[in-house]
Length: 345
Image (tube, rainbow, N blue to C red):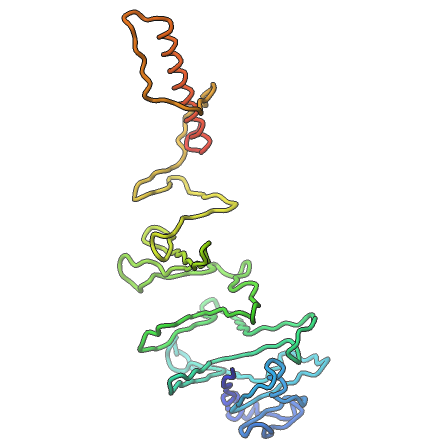
């Protein structure tokens, strides 16, 4: 799948800046018409053609470009920052503001999809780590699809790394701001999104579902997996009023929260709330550890003892046995509550 690459802006910058006019000798070869294309072709040293580079990733590929630029870095070349296409900007407009006049753009492309069943890509890059489409055991090769560097010297400068948006008049039925595709059949990324150590104050911020109003829940996070029946399940996490809610997207079919190799830690004064009522709170202190033998066996709470007009030794003994069993059961309950951390010293 081949997309259009616009080079006209970079060449225009050279044309309107005589002090930095394009010097073909800098690259060792003049501008000449491409043998495959009838527009503009820039050769930056070496003799390799665009088709040879493209076919290293897609053999026998058919493609067409309005303009081309080729940079062939020779073995042992020690120069830095070699570019096939570049745009350089200096802006001194002043007072332009965020969306005002005088905004400068180093590289710009404008697309128009003018017919159904058509597609366009704003920017498309392809990096292959070999001169032919075969696997091999190479080392030390680094492929970076996009690198955006910022050298900020003033704390008053507003910095935006990547901004996506638009001025649409219709809501698309399918719109994804960031999409991670596979690296190939059966090939995957090690990490889809990674914030490195010490690089950000907040790794991820998700706003509310509306720009203003009351009772507007947060934008949710979806977590998906296949269950034991092979059905894809979607868990939802979002801010909902004063709570962070977790639920199945079907609302009611979620089996619950599972914590592996960890604990649930709550700050003092907080507990577990069910249907608006606290059912588990912090530990109740002041309890002294009971002693004796706890009764974990069978226990009959409905036992009664018939007493005669004159107490017999046997009747009193039965009462004593029941009292002992009750004491032991109370101790067992105390030990269980203590083991669960509900009560303690």
